[in-house]
Length: 112
Image (cartoon, rainbow, N blue to C red; front, side, top):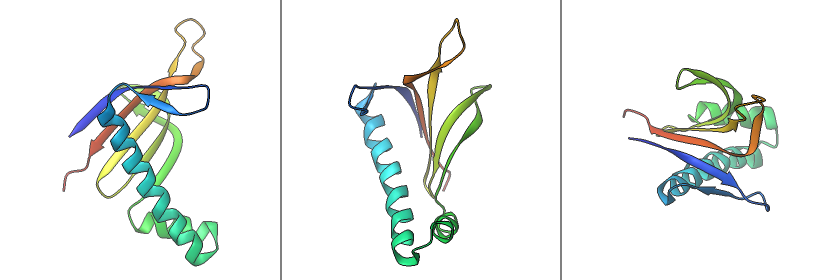
């Protein structure tokens, strides 16, 4: 399964997605990642150890450049045992600067 679409950020900082299915998967993946990380953080009271345990459990969040659709994009990617979620920004055609109010999202299920 792969879903793709767009998102826009409203004045309050909330994201609205081009399709409701994208929103449901975005919330599911990001919420699960944060639940796992926060659980380890609460148990261990150490950010570095919580991060390592989260990785060991199959969850990771990375904000960095990533090759998406044959272009290098500045993206935030969430990895879970079941899904990979990439969210990145649109760039202005003229200035090539990122537009932080809207962009793209792609959610892929991992082969099980």
